[in-house]
Image (cartoon, rainbow, N blue to C red; front, side, top):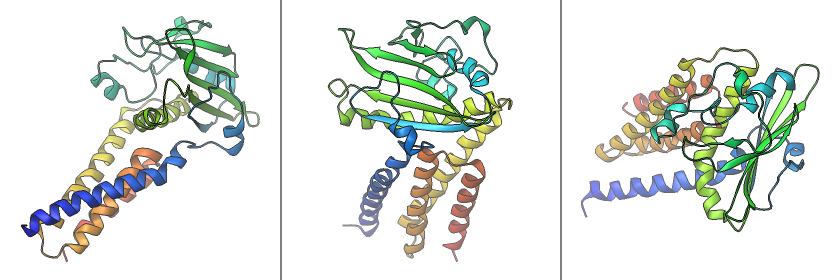
Length: 280
């Protein structure tokens, strides 16, 4: 077999191993991103008996300041506070609000929560002002199969832990299906938590933040691909391979742990420094 072809198959195998092992290693952390042991153990309204994850973020605001942002959730309402552009590529027509919308502050139990203009699988199942807000999807018999719920827990006079939990019915959503769902879910949900934090704290929404997040992710991808190409093309392949593997790890960290922008930038700079280092 051609040596370059052998190296190509080796590179693909290494990439699959790094991505698989890396995701397995990061999974326990992103499933409880920001959550304390108390958050994990706390019962929340509508908890189902199957797979679940719990995530949290500390917000410099009171529950009363956070609450209006929560109750306007949903497509055609306040949006999902995540990557609108990505959701809209799938035709969901999401437009996240950057201000409180008075017309959606009267949410009640039974209010539909839509994913798109024509798909509203969930209804609000709990609404206790300044404490609990959540919705459930049901099967054809009316039994809950998915619960999404927020909890607000004050910490001092002007700080609040916002906790979000998703749980699933084990018969309707077997573990393999939940794992397939959790990969895109973590990307969208961590962005959602950060966006809610910024809005509740009164920081203006900035498209530059999202552009920076996307740009740094793409830069890490480009650096990894360049290292992979030089691993295939250069006789001295050991250093390019090292940068390629590190680049894949950086991509996993950026994707699934929602690192601070400064840390993402530092990691990307390190990757490109590695590209220069391996050429010497």
